[in-house]
Amino acid sequence: MIPMLHDVKAGFFLVVVLAMLVFICAIAGLGAVLRPARWSDRKASR
Image (spheres, rainbow, N blue to C red):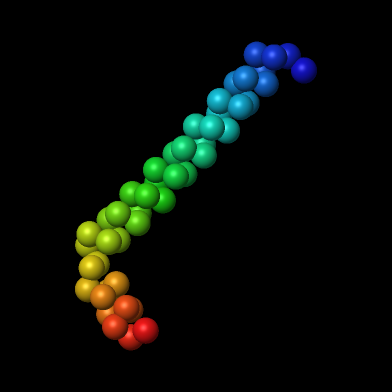
């Protein structure tokens, strides 16, 4: 394989993984900020 092509694929994969992590963290952060009552209800029910 061409080393340049392999580097491009590896870089693209890293970017996709980092974007997914940031997206998941943003969703979790927004959920914790917007709906703290729902989390407390879940903890109380358990």
